[in-house]
Length: 120
Image (cartoon, rainbow, N blue to C red; front, side, top):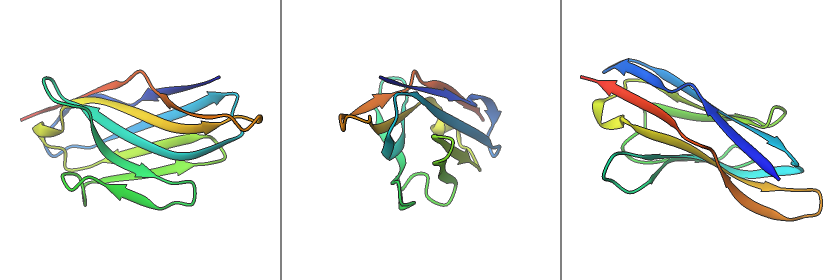
């Protein structure tokens, strides 16, 4: 079993910045793709950005040029640097990771979520 723990959420004014972290721990042999999702009240959960083990990244159009996803494979940690935040970025942000154990069993894990609130 593995666990994901997010941190770094909070309240910020429009135009400000926040940095989210997602740390994986437990029985980990390797981590394939890692991703950030968000869910605003009354809306479906949506993909914000993802990063593959080799470093390739994808972003939602709504965050391109403002958010940067990265990961430190040695620390099993992923980050999301969020700049030029807008009120519409307000949501609970979740991290997700495809984690493989030593017995070659792989599955997706989700973090508990961290609230990001952007005031206008």
